[in-house]
Image 1 (cartoon, one colour):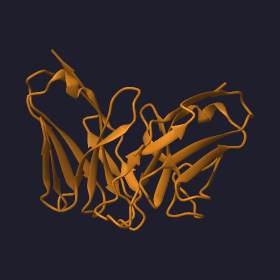
Image 2 (cartoon, helix red, strand yellow; image 1 turned 90 degrees about the vertical axis):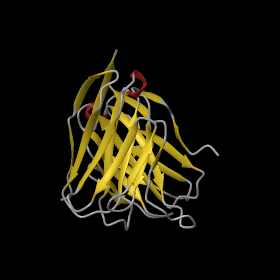
Image 3 (cartoon, chains in turn cyan, green; image 1 turned 45 degrees about the vertical axis):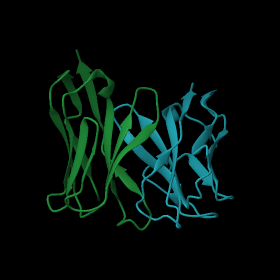
Image 4 (cartoon, chains in turn cyan, orange; image 1 turned 180 degrees about the horizontal axis):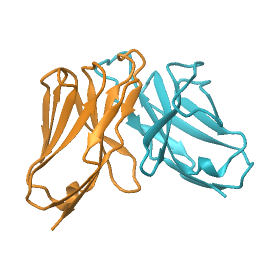
Length: 116
Length: 113
């Protein structure tokens, strides 16, 4: 049981380049989330998904796109990276409908992205 | 708009001392979560508080929830250096229907000998 995994762990991009971050979970969770964390800003929700094939915008969605083609995977794309997107990105998942107790979120290890 | 405020944002304390971190939120919710984050690491779940009056304890940390006051506290007893980390509280942002959590900005705790 790996929990929530993210790839890659580190990445350096040049302005204008594109990339995709992959999040995978093996807990049968319905909900998945992408956050960014910047110093002094706490965690900010970028996009989320409440089930396979669904996505929705969070607090800071501009410049990002997401897809949830399989229940266990949630992809975050940057089409044209900008220096303002330099951040640490965390994926999280929650809500197993067979064991509903809370909406506690489980986090991946993070991806540190630098855009130069 | 749901807001979650933690205070203090920075806390420097000596080993052996007690202190409390406060988490206030602006709308009704009966579910609150505490997370810990070590430098350069991810967030780790500490406590899940699911009802008014809930109290959870683990080691030197104790969390409580007062939904009427919209307040949760994280109490540290006899702090040790290993507790140095950033602590986040989070509240369900949409009545639990979509599991979106609103996070506070975090309290950076430094425990010094």
